[in-house]
Image (cartoon, rainbow, N blue to C red; front, side, top):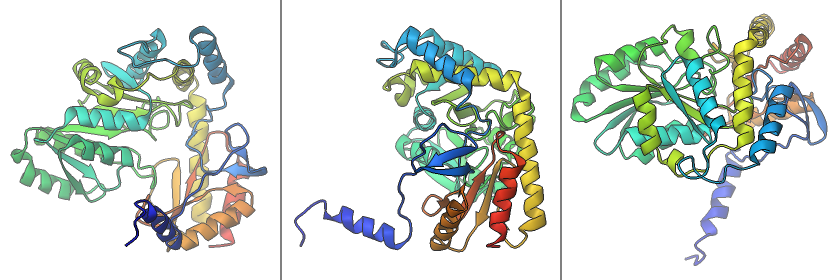
Length: 388
């Protein structure tokens, strides 16, 4: 018997290596953008969630710098103690205005927003129905809540309806949770059907708009707007770190919901408030989304162009269904995905392999930005043609 209680860690790492699941950081040595320097090599970047190219925008940078000058670098405490700033409230009001909800509350990350909201709403006497492809933060929130969690097959409303029929009446409260844009596939949840089921079975509905905010909908408000469901009662969670170019998360909904979360969400109550710089940058990002719709227009022009040339030139590659700026090429195993990712990197394209356990099947995940140009996309397709 091995008497070292930590020996299992090295054994587990060896197992991860053998399965081709091992991960390591990819250090970017330049500002974010459509082109970056990765370990000193110039790369076309198809791995970023910076959909509108705002993370390096001068307006966001100057807003962050001014906030640091005025308020310092840190918030110094939770919002209920010393961490609250007027900037936080301005950002919350801007989010509520964008989402057309009564109110919003800002968390220090999107992960904290999901975990904190779910654990505040659900307890041991309650049940959660969760899409099997949901983000880790939604799954973690369900586990930490202590409630009963039932996963339903990805976007399968028939199965979800049957499970609700069988189980709902046994529990005090019911919460349905789903991503709106599924980050590792690119498809959308069937939001109108989910809302109908939630109403039929007296259930709350929480959707994570992380990859939809700033991207989907006529004004960039997200999938709720995209599906013409604005005004229907639900809980919207999201992040400020993707299309909005900053850091942090939020929950948006009724004023009663937000007031409740300020009093019961542990990851809000017990976390240091979002820094002044991140808060100001996110606020600037929302203002740009509202005032510069041409950015979103360029993004979707790029998405449509990529989808067109992929259909024309890469018919042999298995492409997962998508309705977003996320396009995934499914591959047979983790080893193949790593080889393709390495090949693309040698071609000057950063599009890393995504493997289990993050996803059920290995793939190359492509994300499109408003700041890509046709030459970038053509280079990607040309490189992929040689392996298709």
